[in-house]
Image 1 (cartoon, rainbow, N blue to C red):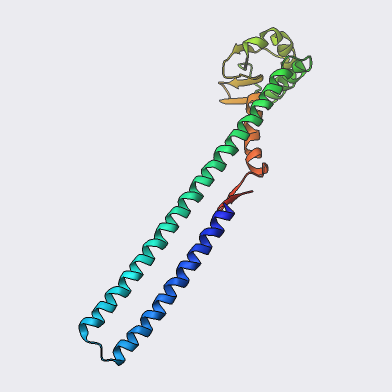
Image 2: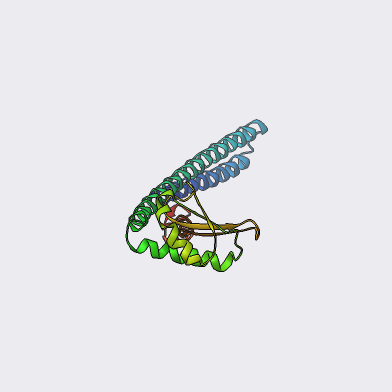
Length: 203
């Protein structure tokens, strides 16, 4: 893109130089004609010729500006598409790692910490713990961690892992899922990936 912009600028400068030369020539010719007492019809012809040149120059300038804007717009679209591809690759890899984590022995500890965190906020005995169907075998350990009565539900909303808790009495939901933690990293990614779009280029 910088090369395209540079070439366009040079072309525009050449056109502007040509236009100025034409204007200067026209002014000189006009004065010469006036000195020779050019009649009204000849003066009108010169004016029409000058106006025609100005119109042609304006048309050329507008065409180049439009082409340059279109090229810059397409370039930015390509950058946005590539940034989206990189983002999806990064987060697909991160999700894979998190799913692998849910198959390790440390995952139960993560679930227990999540339930303890939920219990510190949802203090009523109507607390419902939601988890993946795959994690149902852990419900006794999780109930013990909460240290009070609770019920369990499975949900398809949790794809990766973790738990959520809700209390109708308190009207609150607490999210301790890996899904939400991963999604929150997208904003960080936008801010720190270095993939920003600037005028005519990308950084």
